[in-house]
Length: 454
Image (tube, rainbow, N blue to C red; front, side, top):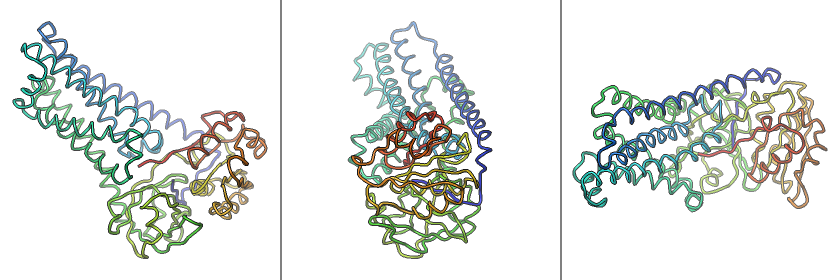
């Protein structure tokens, strides 16, 4: 689900120049992350002087995996920290995917640090691993806290696996993830007070503290302070709730100077409705009409308790928000012409995307639905497309009767290979349309899609 706002029109014919700076930015950030990793490895190597002693090799391996694992954990936090520059250049779905891939490795490294260090110390002392572990926990400063921190991080990691995640509500999953910050704080104190790389090297200690405080500052700024400031400044409230179709409602929101928000068509925000039982939950919902006259419109499908409760929101309910996020925007396209494919409430980012296309861009829009009643805002999309010299095709029916194949796309858009393709909708539709577009001759780097996560 996504959001976009007007008053920031992007010329489609000028998009090619916008992509290159993004690639350079991503390359620069990757280089910075690699440089940081090199420094961390250097810290471990420079602090080791007893490899030949009993247990020295294990102890060194433990220190190395601990430092690298902690550094990787900081990177996972930054990837999910909702930094505007990263969101705009990469997209939240890709950042979350990288976060999910890196997080397990960081936990494995931190776990290896614990095991290897205990084994190394036990070998040096000539005792058993369990005895040495208990001794470390009960006699070393902040070791108990670090053990608790590792337990919290492991708990969060296990809860993120697909099987466990499916059994948890969004609210429970979000609450569990807050323990990540507590677990990291406990581990940080242990490292600074006991880590061999920091105890005898003041410069290393300063670097490590700055790295952790910088990460904490970025997360605090982008996930707390900036959203609070924007919410206070714009004073968004619910003006009207309208049923669009069974299980789908639109909320008209009012606010102050909404046209000044730094939003682009196709982006989304996380919304927080300040009512009892809802104020602490932030969900990504679509904006289906650009700000005009101090108003914007959100369209939401009933997918659970939170979205269902929006249908009964009282007029005047205050709304806080975070964002904008995402890279599902018009300036990602390499060419002038666009084919947009949408299903369900995926039509809303497509609608806002159309508003940023210039006259004469001839967009082709394909709206996919099982039933006619599932087509939302299709009349508005029709108007927007025709004003730009384009067309709208409605594919209504079951998956058995309506196939999203390469032949179908070529029939609807014969010049599809010269267009950028934007996909938004359920995972099944997006995956099917992606494969069909590739088979129809569209280069993969000209197919734009985004999955939305909190």
